[in-house]
Length: 376
Ligand SMILES: [Zn+2]
Image (cartoon, rainbow, N blue to C red; front, side, top):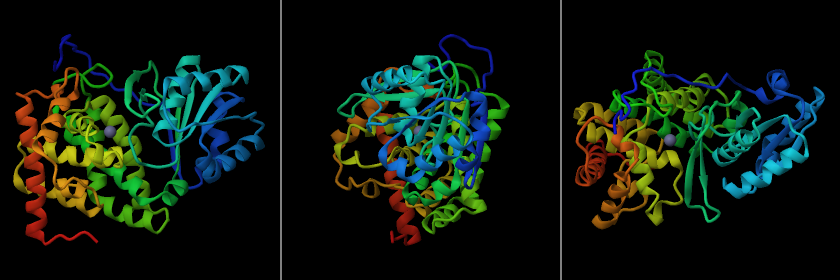
């Protein structure tokens, strides 16, 4: 499972261009010009009010002919078909995604279906999905359907940090939970093939390490800046860590137990209100426990997660009385065939994963007790 085909090539992939800064949307025409002149813009009604109108007026000033598709809210095959038809009818020559993860994944799939390039403009820094050549599709009722792997990454990822700074801070924190997993998971699957099917490069390892360093250095400060709705150097650094560093890092580094446990956790009804990165945050503590890191090192990660209000115990996840059989179900799903937990070069089974989850909760409770930590 670790490297079933004995791949010997190192492989690193990335979007062709990454742009980030305050009011970047106002300069979008400059960066999107090489892609075409008649884009199909995919965004929902909420995002339209926040950033869509500004983007369209900036593009129209530069003579782009923008056609808008209102995103319906779920990244499904049906939605991809519907929007692909709109793009064909409008003779669109490239696709723009403006919004969150589901909008972005739909747009990537539409672009791949039509053989067009895609520009990704995330309006939050809540996941590391924007830079990757991967999309997750759901069924209309919201249940996971499938992964899609594309031949190319987005042509451009453009992040307007003024827009991100005005989004609820919970999104930025969730993005940090997702980004904190990047180095921890890449370290845990050094010998396996990454999401792109190759071995890790030195470049990828450097990116993963830098991602973690930026979070520890600026995470809390950026979270506070986000609460104040302002762009600061710390916020810029963390937006880049969440979006670019984590995006490059997970795709070319690989994912392991933290994400497998996240996937298992989606089976617990009470956790449906949590964001991806919030569940991954707890999964990361599980990963560290599974890796057997020293207590002092584990403390550092728990302290960071708590500092940006991310959950490190069952109670903080909102499941204080979770039953053993529910946790076993999570562990079973995390150990399903094809899951990323098998990327790890060590003995794994359901009991070991279950033990890591309970060990993570115990370590989190112990840390909070020792430090007299109270949530405000
Ligand atoms: Zn993730």
